[in-house]
Length: 149
Image 1 (cartoon, rainbow, N blue to C red):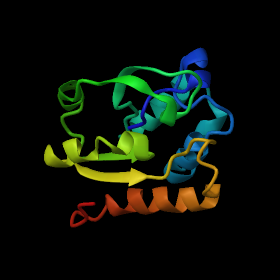
Image 2 (cartoon, rainbow, N blue to C red):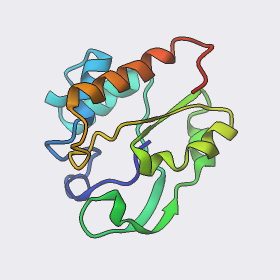
Image 3 (cartoon, rainbow, N blue to C red):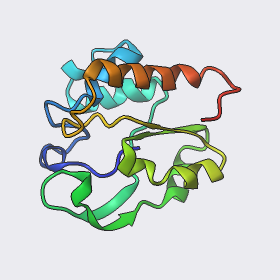
């Protein structure tokens, strides 16, 4: 789960559209798919084929620009809808701390959760390779049923 689409994503009409956002390159590496080279619909089809869903914790907010720190008047998504649409979802990963503020709600609902480093270019304090390592560790931990956080 991300927080809310940035300006580039809203303008393009698809998730993580900013060319410097590391989301698609990271997911490409994790899934072994050339997602970053595909258009939005083929990307989504390939992601779904790997049983991965992409959504946001916020349904709406006010914000100038794309920084999560500038979000005001946030309105959370209806997470019961997510549970109804994805009854087999067992784990939820949060793309950054802003989305991660909702982790407790999902953990309390029985999901395995993990807050990951933001893939946003605004989160430049961490190198892309370090982000990839953190994301890879989280994906691999899902293969171990004893892993809860």
